[in-house]
Image 1 (cartoon, helix red, strand yellow):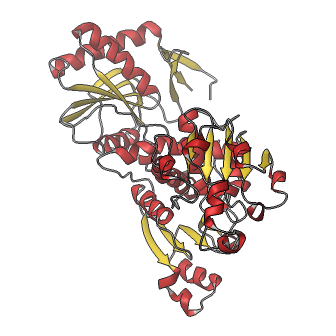
Image 2: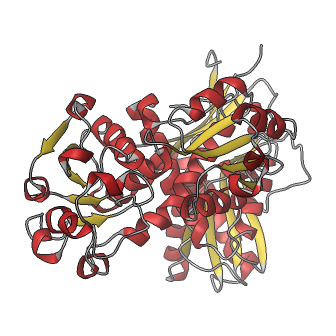
Image 3: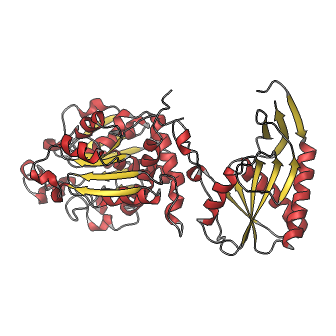
Amino acid sequence: MAFKHKDIIGLQDLTREEIELLLSTAENLKEINSRDIKKVPTLRGKTVVNLFYEASTRTRTSFEIAAKRLSADTINITASTSSVTKGETLSDTARNVLAMKPDIIVMRHSISGAHHYLAKRVSCSVINAGDGAHEHPSQGLLDMLTMRQKYGKLEGLKVAIVGDITHSRVARSDIFGLTKMGANVFLAGPPTMMPPGIERLGNVTVCKDMREAVDGADVVMMLRIQLERQGKTLLPTMKEYSRYFGLNRNLLQLAKKDAMVMHPGPINRGVELNSDVADSDQSHVLKQVENGVAVRMSMLYHVSGGELPTE
Amino acid sequence: MGTENTVILDGVGVKRALTRIAHEVLERNKGVKDLVLVGIRTGGVHLAHELALRLEEIEGEKVGVGAVDITLYRDDIKGHAEHLPVGKTDIPFSIEGKKVVLVDDVLFTGRTIRAAMDAIIDHGRPSCIQLAVLVDRGHRDLPIRADFVGRNVPTSLKENITVAFDAANKPVEVVLEK
């Protein structure tokens, strides 16, 4: 099994075997993060540019640590402090970054499809760190890795995803990844936040009531209400949202005993996740963050080896 | 390849070689105090376990066995069309101040050993590293030699040496393919 892609734009583009390879590599790379000397020389001399057009702490830091642990050099460009604020277009910024000869560009952008546009125009690898409401593949992979560590497999798991499905790139990557791996996905959220026709993505069931999704679930994935996006206009009040689509201890009892609670972070405490659940033993939120570094190391490792011989 | 195969060591021969190496390791290190074995994935790991069994038989004391995967330390990573799968490095003990016996099946260019030594040193500072191999086939690219050798086999670069293992990861035989 070999990974032949130059870029990782989304889990929709990957096969089950490729996802399997990324996950098993991540599992084997995890050991490096618990060493005294957390570094291997694999990507020595490679340059990774983190190009972030949207705010991010977790993902950017995680990609940066991942690259550094593989001995790559990293440079961070944040849109708010760069010439993007002076009106430079994405393609001009990319051309200028490219002139500095990076090997991998890790980008986050608010427009869905920005990575696809970029990847076609540059010779280096492009990794999607989140594009609009499209995909967030590294989050999807780290979610799957976290589930696999507990259950040993993904096939046959019941995974409830609750919240703003329409605007969530995390949900989309999770759905593409999980359904490919044979898990059963159940979605719940306010009708204003449920994209019509989402069932067509595969083994996906839309539930009217959150309790239906959580009932007997192995994993309950709570999405963040994105207050900075359209959240405000689509919901009467936060209080009402929390009453119908927030997870608390009582509701969690409907799920399987010892079911996993996951959240891509940052948590709005008391909105989608109650503190009694967020801080419980069933919460795997920090495990997700920990796995994020290993998954991103795996992505960087495989795309950087993706050049085909030119004979 | 595979047109003409010669068995260099049969099952009994492999066992004898490993038993002799075990005795040599003990003689050199005066017992198993502070001694650990680290096998190189995958053949070296199986052999390290075989060696550990013999050391325990002779000395009556368990010896730690670790596994090192050298994929991340290779120097020819650009030569591959795509990156090789990464195996798990699993050294479940501290190697700080320990005498590490690195175990591999076939010693050839020495590049694998260089990578494995870098990997081990990233885990801590052993007091020394020694090298045990079942077969030394020559053609070194680097100034590396083995401390313990099962069999020296002069080969040509066209030939290939394989150590075969059975389903239980026990060594079966060593074959020279022409």
